Image 1: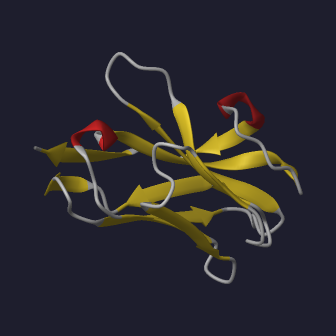
Image 2: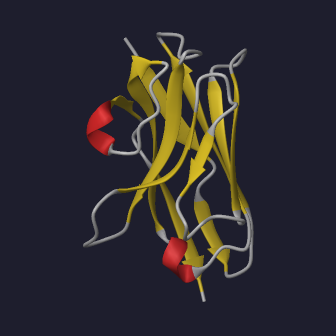
Image 3: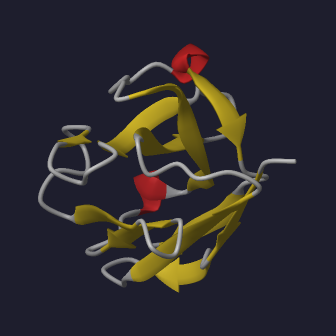
Length: 125
């Protein structure tokens, strides 16, 4: 059984940093892109960042570019999201996800088959 488990969320002040982690078990995703999505209340889920299986290709949404960094450790089957200079508009539930296809690189949530349970990030002003 595939499981993705996020950790690292919390309540922080504007300008603070958080590091999210997502550990996968039950399968190896070294060939699959891994992504972080987020969903704020009343909003659609959006792709924040994606990293290819090798780690050589990344994507960042414009609103987080320059502040967030995605990375992965395939030996640990784990993906990370380093979030700096956090803003109140970053408040959301953050989900990690694994791409359906090996060697794929997608930005839409319907291309991802495996999801974590989500971790809440709240940034106070």
